[in-house]
Length: 382
Image 1 (spheres, helix red, strand yellow):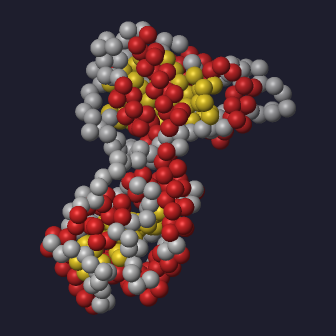
Image 2 (cartoon, rainbow, N blue to C red):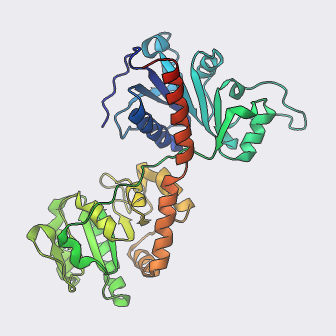
Image 3 (cartoon, rainbow, N blue to C red):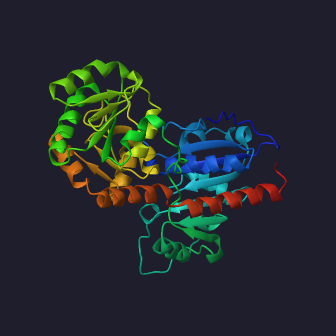
């Protein structure tokens, strides 16, 4: 976690990133992460009126609130003194537009999408009036159609540096060798059920019981939202005649193991490494804290989930849009989807789509990092 305190100084130039839409906040965060790796800078994150609630930073960057609230304060720019302003998508608040027009900062407008650009009343007439977008030093658009719209607003062609949305998800995690204790599981068809709530344990186990009728070698690796629920897990496994092994009891799984359980959250990564398909718990009902599905996506896993995605609804929507995630409503649907994904080819396609989803936009993110680093170093701001 980065511990950032935005105190302006020549040795520590401030970079301000504004996300206008909720689905762009993660892209803003990730951009700050990559810039932090290159520059000793302070970072501010603000967000637009479209946000229903204040987002939480995963990296401890300072999220100072809705931009309209903060910029009404006269001392805002004296306090933070940003040298770079990066805006992700629109619409842009009025006071931010005024600052961009002053041309005192390196200004970059990224993730420009057609639906969030100002609409022209009379499309049959050419737009001869320069818009705020022409004031930015560099622009990145969603696609060629948006670029064409900006050309009509007299945005100079050389300012458009790329097309496509910025990378909005975590980069793939480095490969980790699994412990020797998992070696007996290699080669077996598997799926993982992670962060499972007490009320979901029986539902998940019954789905696994149905799957075993069609594929008797299938093994379920499972973690619970509260490790103290181990007794309930054992009780349900016994009732459903499912053979359970527990890592902490030093029970090495063998061919007879049908359910493999770990109390340690860090074993989730190992489970995901072994399982091409992951079901995320606490999604049949919002009962406990949910987990980020993009972690499984970074490990090339296909993702299953219930109807209640809560704080990660944007991430699940994105994954579903590229066929990397599927929603199930009950135990029978979960079993049915697992049976379909028993084919290695189908699971691999979902996993590849998930990995492509989280990796998309990396090129444009890299370009912005390069532009900002060049600007700051050229002006001897660090």
